[in-house]
Every structure is written in C-alpha cells, then in structure tokens.
Image 1 (cartoon, each protein chain N blue to C red):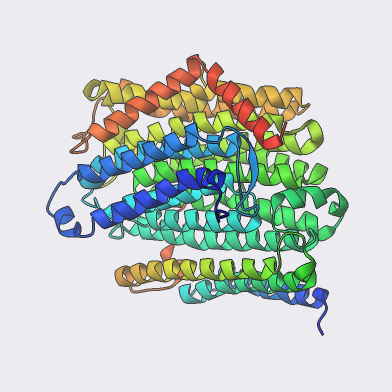
Image 2: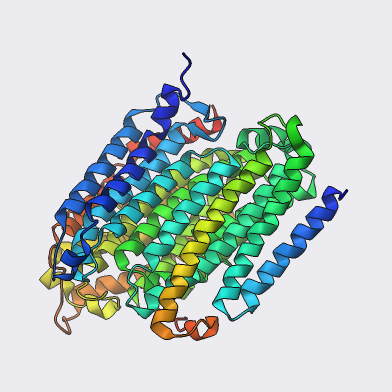
Length: 106
Length: 493
C-alpha cells in the first residue's frame, strides 16, 4: 500500500497546514481547529511508525498506537480548555477575532 | 500471588499521588463554597491548611523514599532516582509557599475558590511526574497535564480583560509548542526501533545519530521545551501572560513550570544527546536569551513585566549547562543547573509574593506602587531587597552562588564567551533590579498603600523564602553536594 515516506510527507503537509492556520487565521475557532489538525497529523505519523515497527518492537507491542490513544485524550482535554476560554472571551467582548484581542505589547 | 504493582513502584508514585489526591479533596471540600466566597473577605483558612498538609506530606514522601536508583518502573514509564526527587522536591516546596500565600491574596481580590488550589495541586502532581518520567508517553502526558492546569490558572480572574487575553495567548502558543514537541517525539519513536523509552533511545542513539529524522526529532523536542521555559525566540507570550494573570499564580508558573521543564529537558538530552550542532544552536539561543531578556527589562515600569523579562534572562543562564553537557565534557554541570533552579525558585517566588501582599481588589503592579514601602512595612521591604539582590547575583545571596557555579563550569568547559556574556548581562541587570529597591527606600509613598486583608500566610511564605535566599547564599555547601549527588544518580555513576 502506502510507503512510510508517503505517510510522512502527508504528516508534514497536514502539520504545516495546521501551523499556517494558527498563525494566519483570525477566527479563534479556526485557530483551535488548526491546533487539533497539528496533533492529528502527528497521530498519523505515530500510527504509521507503530505499524512499521509492529510487534517486532522490543519495548512492547503497538506502542505507537497506544501513544496515539494518549494523544487523543490530551487533545480532547485541550479542546475543552480552548473552548471554555473562547466562551469567556465571547461573553465579555462579543468578538472571536484574534487581532481585536491583542492589546498588550512592549 | 504476584503483585500487579511492586512496592518500589508505589513508593515512586506516592508523592505525585498525594498531590493529586489533595487536589481532589480540595475540590470536594469547597463544593458549596461559591456563596461564601462572594460574601466579602473570607480567608478560607481550611483550604490553605489542607493544601499545606498535602504538600508537606508529598515533600516528606519525596525526601524519605527512594534510597536506591530504580530506572525502570511501570514498564519503563518512570524512574525513581535522586534527580527526579530533587526536582520534584523543588516543585513541591514552591507549591507549599504558593498555597500559603494564596489564601490571603485570593480573598483580597474576592476570588477565593477551591478550584484555584486544586488546579495548583493537579499541576504540581503532573510536574513531579514529569521530573520522574523516562518515557516519551509519560513525558508528553505529564507536560500536557501541567500546561492545561497552568492555562486555567493564568485565566483565573475571568472578569479582568488582561487575564483572559493572556490566558488565551498562553493557550494557543502552548498548544502550538506541544504540537512541535509531539512531532519530535514521533520522529524519535520512528528511528529508535519502535521504542518509547528514553533508555532505548539512548542505546540506539549512536547508530542513528546521522539519521536526519533523529536530529530533526531532537531539535523539535528542544523547540517544544524552549516554548515552555521561555527561551528566545519563543518567549513572546511570557510578558503578556505574567501581566494578565493573578500575581500569586504568576509566581507559581514562573517557578514550577521552569523547574519541571528544565528537569525533563535535561533528562531528555542526557539520553538522546544531539552533538555539536545542537550544542552550538543552544549556545546561540542562550546568548540571545540572556541579552534580550535583560535589555528588554531595562525600561519596564510594570513590575510584573519586568520580572517576566528577568525570568527570560534567567532561562538564558540556565541553558549554559545544557550547552556544556552536549559538547562531550559531560553533563556533570547539570548539578549547577539544579542548584540554580533552587536559588531561582525561592528568589522569584519571594519577589512575586511581595507584589501579592500589596494587592487589594486588584494587583498593584507599577514600580511606583512600591514607593516608601520601607517605612511602612520594613520587613517586606527587606525581603524584596533580598530577592532583587539575589536575582541580580550580588554576593551573600542564593543567586550569586548559582551564577558563580554556572559561570565557573562555563569557563572550565572552555566556553569563556558564554561566561563573559553572562557576566555582562548580569551587570546590566543590576540597574533594573535596583529600581524597586530605590523606590522602596528613597521615595515618599505617593498614595495610600494597601496590604492584603489576611496576610499571615503571605508573611510566613515571605519569611521562609527570604530565609532560604540568605541561607543558600551564606552556606550553600549542603545543597551543592546534594545537587551533585542527584546529577550523578541521573548519569548512573
């Protein structure tokens, strides 16, 4: 099927799309989605590496897949915090534009 | 019958377990506490007492247990060595001081709720685990747990604009850096033959050292950690977050996050290596971080921002032992880092706790708010002076001994330019560290000077921190020996 190199290229592309989204988009919800995309790109790489190393690995079977499960749990917790911050910001300023948010500098 | 978990494993996880349990208890005790918090100034001393009991218990568990070095517990997920216990004890000590100070401070801003304490404790549990973690999964989960708790603490005062704003910036950049960290971990996992344990990565390292994925993986992980400790160019969030967050939480995150992240970074680099290129890169980061942190702090009038840039500068000093370790002279200089972390922790906490004592309703965060403090609260002014002198590295304080150790290692390791730049930037820093001292002693008080309503906890914490600064400055021998020993336990010699 796919080679590990192909999957790594896909991982890199998804990760870069995530970086672009975090840095360039103004809408907070899109920023949060881009953060999730970055984590999920890495999940893809982990699952792929886990399959390559398979059961032959000397430190336990399927360790890559297990790592992915942990990352999923962490990503869910992160999304919960991000969305609750979003809620606080919306209630107070009725805006979810990143640029309107930044007042402090120097 | 074979036990599922061995006694050594229980002993290793006991400190973190105590901290997590205390966090849960604090949350449950204050379930009906919201109404009481709203009815005026309520110190809620019982929360402080429970918190102190929990952190003292955890500290005792850290100090008493772990006589032998056990490297592979929970299938290689964590180890039980003196290094992890030393760093964990620093975190727990910071937790004890923060909990002491939190009661009076939080009630004076009218936000004394149980979740603040439980978030502190959940974060502290994760930090202790991070100090002991020896496996990519456990490092990742611990660092994320501590980050999530600190994000919420930064945005704790939701009714203040800078707090939510700072918390959001912190959240986005923190999650962003976690992405890099995780990608680096995936690469390391990929090239190290399908093992997630640091020991296997160390064993495999030499064979794959030329592999581009391995180098990129280590680099990405270092970038992820650089965000957490606030090294240039990944420092931009620090001043905004420090300015916005409630000051007692700032003291906590400035100290504990840095201790735990540096401990994990050191453990990672000892295992993975990284060689000449990475060492040069970190040296460059250290130089820029020292200079930029100190220069940017020069013209700050907000004392929280000033301390934020000062924290960035201290990150620069703390990177020097890593440079030395990576060049093959060995990681023995890591003991200087451990001592410096201890000195930095008590000093920085003392500075933020002084700001906390002046808060009522909101933080008093301009340097002018310190005017004439010496005549009104002479003891607080003394502690603040000690903290400033120690941050600047004046003799007879803890900060001086720490800087001396790091610069001596740099000179002995052949990095004279690093030591020189460190000394020059320390000299620059004396200027801005003395400004609060001048304000306290030589200026008249301008307006009414506030102090928190129930200051006993803060006063006790200040006394402890001030005493520690002096003790470590005058008689550092015991702690120096202990940090050397801890470092040896990590290097396995």
